[in-house]
Length: 334
Image 1 (cartoon, rainbow, N blue to C red):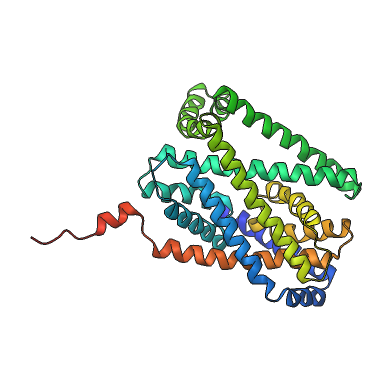
Image 2 (image 1 turned 90 degrees about the vertical axis):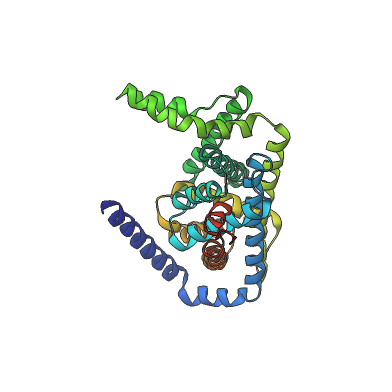
C-alpha cells in the first residue's frame, strides 16, 4: 500500500512538473511544434521500431546458441516494450517479464535472467559511453549551465567506474555482484549474505560468461547496441529537421547522449514524467535551440513509444510461448 501511494505521489509530481514546463515554454508554442512534426512522426516511430528490433537481436545474442529462434526473441522484446510503456513501470517490470517469457519458451531460469541482465548491462554501458562523449564535448565548449557542471563530472566518473567493473569481469571471469552482496549483507547477517549471494551467483555467471567467454560475440553485442543508440540519435535529427531547426548528426548525437543520464538519475519517477521534458528544454537552450523544441521531442517520443508499446502489448496478448502452446494442444483422437 505504501509503495503504491509513493508511486502515485511521484507520478503526480511528474505530471505537475510537466505542466509547469509546458506553461513556461508556452503551450501554444509546443502545440504548434507538434503540428510541424507531421508525417515525420511515422519516420520516428519506424526508427524506434528498428531500435527495438536491434535490442531483440542483442538479447538473442546473449542466449545459448540455438536455444530460441531470433523471431521469437524479437517478439518477446516488443512484448516487454509494451509492458514497460503501458504500465509506466520502466525496467522494473519489463526486464523480469522478458526473463519470464524466455523461461516460458524453454530456457532455464538462470540462463533467462542472466541473458536479460547481460543485454540490459550492455545497453546501459553503451549508453553511458555515448553520454560520456556528449557530456565531455559540452563541458569542453562550456555549454552546460554552471549548476549542471558538477553532476556532469559525476556522470563521467560513474561511467569510468562502470566500464572498469565490466572490464574486470571480462578479464578475470569473476563476477562482482554476488561478492558485493555477500560483503554488504554479511555485515548484518553472514548467513543471509551467503544465501543472497548464492541466489545471485547462477544468474551472474551467465552475465560474466557473455563478457568473458566469446570476445567476438561480445563485440557483436556492443556493435548492435551502438547501432541502436545511433537510431535514437537519428530520431532527434529527424525531429529537428521537421521543426525547421539545424539538424546535424553531430548535434543530434550530443543531445541524445547528454540526456542518457536523465533516465538513470531519475529512474524512480514513472516514465521520467516532467523530468525528461525539463531536461531536454534546458539542454536545447544550452545548445542555442528553442526550449519548446526539446519539450516537443520528448512528447513525440512518448507518443511513438505508446504506438510501439501498443504493438508489443498485442504481441504479448496474442502470442503464446512454445511450452504453453504444447500444454494446451489437445491430444489427437485415436
